[in-house]
Amino acid sequence: MAVPVQFRKPPLGGIGKKVAYYPGCSLEGAARAYDVSTRIVAKELGLELDYLEDYNCCGAMETKNVTFWGTMLLNARNMSLARQQGHSVIVAPCNGCSFSLQRAEYFLETDKNTLDRINQLLQEAGEKPLDTVPHTYHILEWFYHEAGPEKVKEKTRKPLRGLKVANYYGCLYTRPHFYSRTYSHLAPENEEQDRPRKRETADDDEHPYYMEALLEAAGATSVEIEPMHTQCCGGPHSLSDEEVSEKFVMMILQTAKRNGADIIATECPLCHASLEMYRHRLMLKGVPDVDVPAAYFTQLLGLAFGYSANDVKLKDNLSDPLPVLKKLGLA
Amino acid sequence: MAIHERSLVEPERILRKDRLVIDGVDVSGDWNLIILPRVIEDYDLSLLDEILQQPEGKTILQCYQCSYCTASCPVHNYWDERYNPRHFIYLARLGMVDELQKRADVMWRCVSCHKCTHRCPKGVLVEEVLKAILRVLAKRGLIEEYPSKKFDKFFLEQVVEYGRIEDGELLFGWIEKQGYKVFKDPILKKPIPLFGDIPEWLKTLAVKPIKNMNIDFLILNAKHMLIHPKTKNWGKMKQVLRKVLQEEGVELH
Image (cartoon, rainbow over all chains, first blue to last red; front, side, top):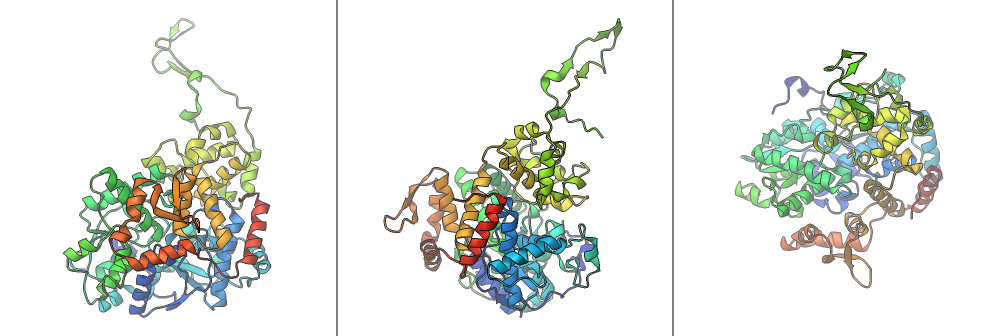
């Protein structure tokens, strides 16, 4: 791992073993594999996911461009549901969802007027108003902080020996730090609150390393693809701006392939779908060095914990990582 | 503080002489390029006021034009140099609507990767500010409808209607909006991805789960396409959302 040593010492714990789980729309359909494998990994690591009943879409990166208040309301409803289930922490496995919830958290925490108006709207819609604003973490951060590489090592029964993994984090996992780590620059008085600061439990924002730490603990070898590990995949424009998305995905895949990666590990259903979709399109066009398959990091962890390829739904991946894994005797 | 923008200087204002003699003195060399001054009268400061009224646009005044956002931007670096976040903020603050209009074809290309916001040393929420500028311009009818806005609205409609989105409907609905003819079954009017005039890549991609014999995945997604996943107790929320959208001046179909 090429991450400087001083970045490797965040205090562990502090999020809680049992949290509200906001899967997001994608994980109920096309990204079912991520949902299934996430539950497997959480169970193995001794963590508990409390499914957020009757949640709604977070608005992703799309609705926020059209409506501010609508997007705030969508996220506030999910937060309200989490509060009703007695949680003050939400984890989301999707970069888009965790971003949206963190963004809402930022605006609700830094502006009292926004919070008041949203609470009023929530009441109008027949939901309970927010007493406190719950914190949101990406599920990868939660795994790292509540279980950590040691626990993963302990649980690994079938190490991913010989598998060269390119860890792809995507944009919004740590960015922007105003939302994901600290939101103090607009309201300095928030610094004095005794609530836990997010700063203490978040991945490094320019050089994220949690995923490679977990996968290396499971026996895999990490391939350095910096700076492409946080390069955009086209994200919200993957359908509406095809030229740009295609170019970005090409850069990510080629960097991974040319650095010798067998597989790309992802942690966001949107990035995953975008990589797989454009990988297919680029291969149809005959672009060289793009045939790296993608798998969710939880699928790889699941395999290492001794689950079968069918248990972690590897067949769901359109880029078909099975041949690569079979060749190494991992699936 | 004057910032000299090369791109703000029109070609007709640049005088270039091979040999320049003024009052009998040869001043060629360093002096052979002259930019004629321009008086800007068509600025519109109410643009800035309106951006400041947007909840996301409030941080625009903190910008001190260091250009860290532009240096980080993948669209600027890997796609089109004309996409320049710092410049857009500069123009918006001066109220130079016509210059912004000239860049309307690249302004919407932001992929929301938030590198700009993340790295801004002054705490400007750059991505949000740019979206606020774009929204204000669109609201005033100064720029044409752009693809990502169409998609955003299409997405929002699904969310408001059902509370959740469904990947299949999003993908095929969008393909249909692009002018492709999606084949639909005659009874339920739901898209069947194997036939019809859809892009080749989509046809070959949709066939993969069938080739892999991934039956339960196919059944799950077919079920979602037939019965759209919904949030329960969405009725009241839908009403409130529609009211909020109406207040913000967003029109849905």
